[in-house]
Amino acid sequence: MIKNMGSTDRIVRIIVAVVISILYFTKTVEGTTATVLLIVGAIFLATAFMNFCPLYLPFGISTRKKKD
Image (cartoon, rainbow, N blue to C red; front, side, top):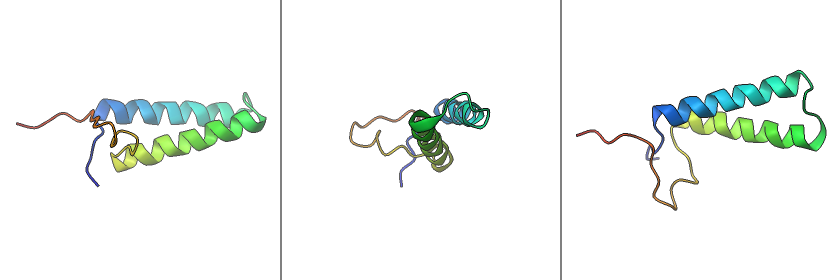
């Protein structure tokens, strides 16, 4: 897998996942919305730790800085 995610992108994804989990466990969001948000949060965490976003690949997007 080619890494295509920069550190800022990773940090933002982790923060969003943490916020979603806090909203879920404090029961601020419930029902179907909570389930969907929890899945999105899990995907954000997984992609952040793998440094790879499959949705970036078809569009040729990379937030990773190029080393000279």
